[in-house]
Image 1: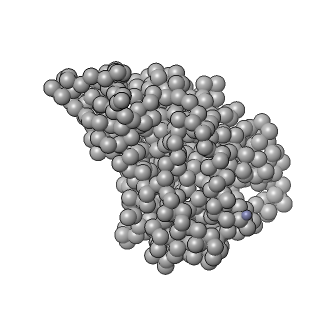
Image 2: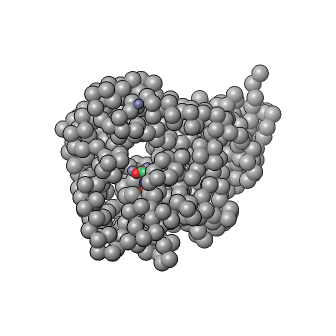
Image 3: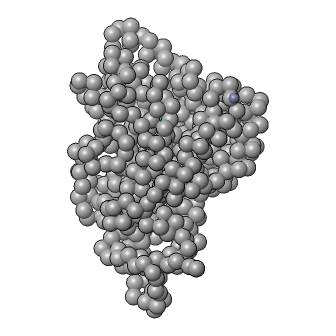
Length: 467
Ligand code: URP
Ligand code: ZN
Ligand code: ZN
Ligand code: ZN
């Protein structure tokens, strides 16, 4: 028995096209598109007809960097896979790629199994996993090959956080060499964590304990240096490289220089670096703790370079690095010592709206909005075709987006399980109205109609940028 849904009257926007078309959905997939009022479109019938007149019809967002329930800094990110994926749906995101974590001294498989257990049966939208490597050794290197085979095709390494996730240059090189052979993509947290830890110690000794010092010790130069080093190591290994959460102009310059040489080097930035700054970190009464993440927020002057990078394709992806910690009881762990503030910001619900606002502000075009938020992350991580576009055969992950409604972002109205909004009070124009995940309506005109467990695990292919 086939179920059909018809979306009538909207402007369909993909990374490549804007077309006034009706969209026919059959059995969870896009079946066809046809111009409004065309013979084909008029002949279609369906059990469910959604009116998108005056609205955009866009692919569901693909957020390639989230951390639901991440254990970090002695606590856990406050969104579970259930609450976090529901919030994602509210914000027009229909796929996340989260990070399974290898613990030191343990197998990749154990970490992966643990993350599957956290997510299984809980998610409102589809999800995949990257793997965080915190212990690169002979046996974890061998395991990488197996993971690539089964759809975990990307691996995050940390040049930061010594004693936690940190890998030294030898481990980084070995993982890169392995990925060069198995088709995996190395994702790099590029900050010189060894040098940063020295500066943290010195700052605390001087009595500099406020949240703003988190930004001051994690220097731009130490992001740029690590980015440069990661690129050179990837060249030596003959491996592609994806640098996560790029925040500094000087780091964008390193990526741009590498890309000018034709190297397979890619970069992601996040809404917090595009819309927030060290001004937020300096907010009084410990409020700055709400904005502590790594890489840190930068002085506002860096934003122009990030927007330019997104326009010139020196940066390909905007993901959120969604890693929420409540102000009360979690961020507060770092009162009197900024180095104990758990790192991370909430944002999975806000990304599509903030980037639509960037369209209105003239930073990017509508199609580039869809490209950096849907198509390009899907392609980067081996999901494109199924995810990231509206085309026959693709999963019917579709958002009906009202580009004219104004909203005020606030913790009062958001659905993320966190007691503050990083964008409290910000006015944006545009709002998600209805969301379909594989043809099922999960947000119906601003009402949640989805369920935990609808979201399915998606094994991924190798990167379609690289392969
Ligand atoms: O501050 C951040 N970004 N927390 C999440 C972990 C990471 O480094 O991505
Ligand atoms: Zn073990
Ligand atoms: Zn990171
Ligand atoms: Zn992260």
